[in-house]
Image 1 (cartoon, rainbow, N blue to C red):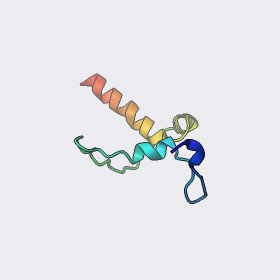
Image 2: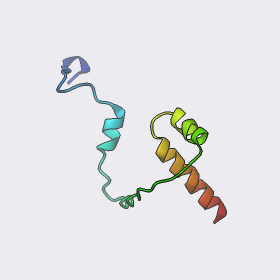
Image 3: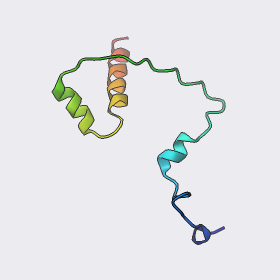
Length: 73
């Protein structure tokens, strides 16, 4: 089948890379541990900076905290 043979509709739009990545089966990989939801107070300017980097700011905050933890270990 060629790309020109594919009809895109609102029900079947063009695939988004993020959607495909989320659908990849984690067969053979160790399950990702569940995250814990907490309430964390941070300075407004720090939060705005992370949010200003775009979607996924909570993941980036977690990554920075993990790097700090690993650096001290």
